[in-house]
Amino acid sequence: MPKSYSEINQKIKNGDVVVVTAEEMIKIVEDQGEQVAAEEIDVVTTGTFGPMCSSGAFLNFGHSDPPIKLEHVWLNEVHAYHGNAAVDCYIGVTRMADIKPFDYGGGNVIEDLVSRKSIRLRGTSYTTDCYPLEEIDTYFTIDDLNQAILCNPRNAYQKYVCAVNSTDKTIYTYMGKLLPNLGNAHYAGAGCLNPLCNDPDYETIGIGTRIFLGGGIGYVMGEGTQHDPKNGFGTLFLKGDLKQMKPEYLRGVNFEKYGPSMSVGVGIPIPILNENLARKTAIKDEDIETEVIDYGIPRRNRPVLRKVNYKELKSGKIDIDGKEVKVSSLSSLFYARKIANELKTWIEDGIFFLNPPAENLPTNTTYNPMKQVSELKFVKDLKKPAVTCFDDCDIKVVAEKIIEENTNHIVIIDKDRYLIGIVTSFDVTKAIARDKSHIKDIITKKVIIAKDNEPAEVAARRMKMNDISALPIINDEKQVIGIITSEELM
Image (tube, rainbow, N blue to C red; front, side):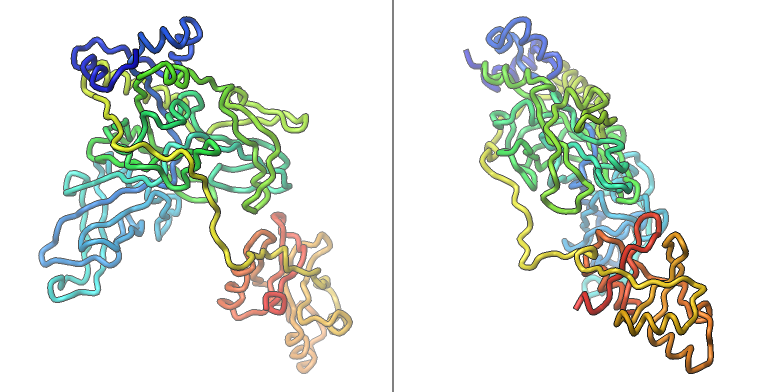
């Protein structure tokens, strides 16, 4: 017979509830079948712990004396968003500090907050009659705040893609450092322990569901941003009281040459209300498939190299076109298991009860890309071959090349095509007028450059800021591979 939330909560109160983790449920269903498992098991606990970039916190500082209406706010030199009431702010985990070290960000501030460390608050105001204070510089801890609310618009992805890089250069992404020529692979998520893998139809996960969040109790506020359940990439919008949480389950992280984020611990209890839920919570890693995506292609529609399941990912290596590629996780399976077991203990000890959702989450939405009214062009789309000379060329030779190639820019390179400098037609004109014959006398050695995969608008802005009309294009080895000029950009 189907169970109800009230029956399970009564069992929790009486101390005779039967709770297992999602990994334990697999063997129970294998050995005893779905029907027996549905009768004997009351709750299955799940867990995941990994980078969740769409996270942050609302903080209320209380009013100063005299009062201030904060316009700009920095917490340990990380710029927080103010656009709320006078002394509220929202700090996002991916915001980078405005001063060195740049590997410190909003996620680190939140970890320091829950660690009870002192945080510097610096704020400025445009002042009003009722808020006359112009600046404030003070220190506080989380216990000095009226409210500290973790509010995460997108957490607990149902699964993640596996990222690789087929190009001949190392790239740095939110999926970590990806080595060239399929040198490694990264994935995230806990597979069979992942909360949304255990209830993909959202029978028990919805608005108001009580959960484990960051070491404290949290709640599901609704579907997360980019919620894409049709394609197996559901997400959750979560909130909880930061003052209850632990730094063990909220860790500031920094991805090399990408930026800061925060690893968040999330655990969701799945009540076994029926046989269908018993079956779903026994999902295995080999039943959870994702795609291997080539992140070396800087486009929305990156190539899919193959399908792969989480059992293969967790083995530490995958096969791509006959090549064995080492694979590692950005998530912690150790902490996912720890979260599932800690939540299990809370329920068994009668300190955590289950909430039926006030409203179920949608199951028919899909994620849509940004609407763009014009095509985004990259430097490599507009570049042309660079006209080059060596640094021992005679100025007359350079002048002849300018005429022959109908160009205003000559890129100076060495024998291995490494960039030395740049010369313009105006430089040559000045040199001839002043009787200079050596190219070394007129080279501009401090050269502003561009790279293939940069948006063309970035290159245009760089030219404008530096009052120049061309950028040599170099590869990762600093060899010249082309040039982009203001003419191409126009």
